[in-house]
Image: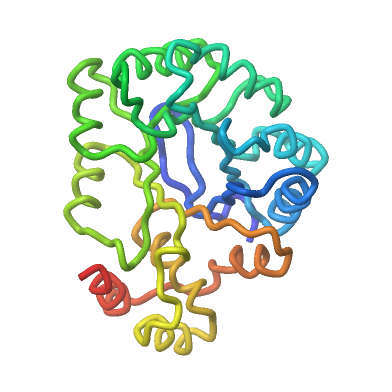
Length: 260
């Protein structure tokens, strides 16, 4: 599948975020570099990193050496909560490590506990307005915390990246994000899933795919962004191979029901 054919979701402005991304948590050093290069070779065009992952330099080098155009890759990084008051400095360090003039998405990694989120959110908005990032959002926020940002600034986070999987599915949380125009992005799709669950194995067998591929396709068919991670080239390729099948409405309902 070409980049243009991969399903995306529109964000504020003219940005489009691929629904399938590649997560890089714990992928550090040369193993991290190799994993990102393998992911780009396998067809991923959305790479997710963070300041606290300690791998931005390797991610940037892999993107540079992939031969792909920077504008064809959607790149996310995140601000650690302990960098309150040093937001601009942190982003500039990220851009330098990633060897790029901008990121596509900059997230507040966790809600800061001490000073509150609103001053930090204003700094992200300022960076967006200066074109250092195309769009901004949050991670690990509750709906009420998102509402605080919206009420204070009249600016809605483009994305909320949270832990998500079939077993964590919550229709109300999904609807609350959709109603606010916030794209839901799920991380740790496999860690929170029982890949031996009879529902997943039955559906996987019906499509001649793995239960892990079913979990990824379930996210995509819900228009929820998903960022599986792996440092194993074969697993990276298999996780990218989720565009040759789709789930029926009944299968989606059966998987949704795993959330209880």
